[in-house]
Amino acid sequence: MKKKYGVLALALVAALTLSACGAKDEPEAANKKVQTITVGTGTQFPNVCFLDENGKLTGYDVELVKEIDKRLPGYKFKFKTMDFSNLLVSLGAGKVDIVAHQMEKSKEREKKFLFNDVAYNNFPLQLTVLDSNNSINGTKDLAGKRVITSATSNGALVLKKINEEQGNNFEIAYEGQGSNDAANQLKTGRADATISTPFAVDFQNKTSPIKEKVVGDVLSNAKVYFMLGKNETKLSKDVDKALQSIIDDGTLKKLSEKWLGADYSKEQY
Image (cartoon, rainbow, N blue to C red):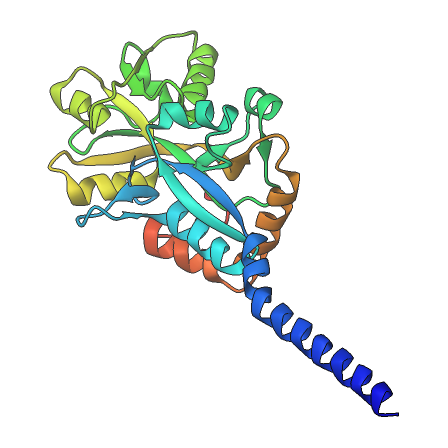
């Protein structure tokens, strides 16, 4: 009988020991399941992804990703900054897993990359001129003018379409890599207009001596999404789930009002 109890006691001790080890190792095992996601973004998009006066990366897209990170414990999001022109190259090469930079859908982009389903912003583009310019009030006033934009932006596609509809009666030029090149070209008279958003113009006017204004109707009111690698379907769904909760509880609206000056989570007209 004593031998039987001795065997039972040894079994109980072994079970307790294994249980204790399992409890101790559980956090470590859980940590191993956390997937690190590299987020590609820029540093020169006013109010969206930029460096503040202390050199800290912040803005609407950046703070939204941080909020998503809080709601997805299975992931750890880290940022990798670069020039806008390198974002899609890096995504295609697998150097980043997701791009956060107010990206709009296009047929070309959808062939190569995956977009999440839930839009997180509405991106209104309008003609933008110097504040002192009263001769351009809409696209019909662009005849014979020079309009500058970024070659890789959706604004370039919008301008190209408008120009074709108007018989190609204005010139489209592309800005250089220099800081605030479009605004500088407006100031020096090398360009007559550009295309931008009200929130970018607002930031420009608060931080630069070159004052601008948006004119005319909203030319494009596209929705913006995160861009991911073609195989990142699970990540895309998880991001959508977190994003929907951010929309439903009003957090997205607050972020938009804070960083963009209005609620751009809904369409602008």
